[in-house]
Length: 383
Ligand code: ATP
Ligand code: MG
Image 1 (spheres, protein in one colour):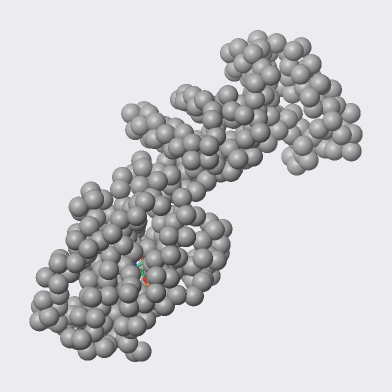
Image 2: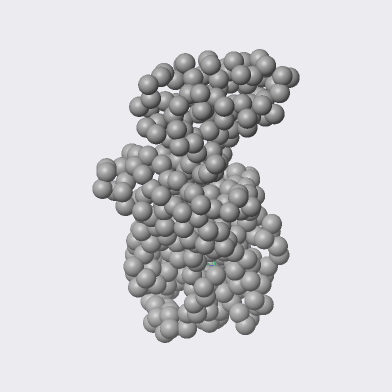
């Protein structure tokens, strides 16, 4: 008897048929590479309503479940037995043989059937199958459920529907450059953009050799976790210390945070365009720190020349912490690090800078020329 994974998607149905077809192709590819990365073999078959995964080694079932749980675009999935018949008697025999120990007389249970193109009705098979068991039926809150799906010439029998992450397949929305810092916020911002189908590329500004490599190593570790949700990950490392030193040597302390951030944003915009990204994403949340007041965010935003996504803008810190825990990045983010800016950070940054003043300073110190010279020093790492 063949066992098969039934993989369901949902939001893809909202798209026109051409778009849906493309999304499905991407989802299939992502499942293929997700399995391959875990040395799992199997055959993936796509239809308009489902994806089927078959011909896998039965010992790999729990590994497969772990992979499917983390693939965006999958609404839910079930491990089912596939019967090459819709004959009622054969289905009854199969259920009797295989599930008599699954539903005990002390359990409450329900049979949930779906019949398409069969000579009998859903209700017939539900009532007749329920008669097999010497246990109490509970249609609203059963302890055990057996699902029967009979259509055309095939019947699937299963007991569990496991939720997926839903969202849209990674890569279906286009490329996006994520500014990742090693803190709590940016990994979550990354997760949320992956969920909406972005193919993320990552950029980290580091201050090595003026500080240790801790932030770089943390970002790499965080991306190892994010790799559960995105098959291949590229990280760009920008040596930012020279710029920080230059700004520190030439400007008043109270402006520096905003100047650093604007510099990061200009560099990110250049790299994003070079890499054909449609957007830059940050982990900024409104009013979280002094650089994230509405005043300062608008001054920082002025330095970006590309669409900017800030998926955390409406989240409280506690909500961010809880979600970061769920996606698995919180513990690494919480490890201590000399923040890239700590060495260069003033004690009392200005919470409300004026764009005109900032632009005047930038012109005086010719910062953009300085930045462009460093672009060639970016390193690339495959995670
Ligand atoms: P996080 O937890 O992501 O570090 P944060 O609350 O510490 O966020 P900031 O340090 O003000 O916030 O940074 C805001 C956003 O700017 C970050 O979420 C990230 O997207 C980006 N950013 C900050 N520092 C860096 C860095 N060194 N490299 C890349 N991006 C950065
Ligand atoms: Mg930070």
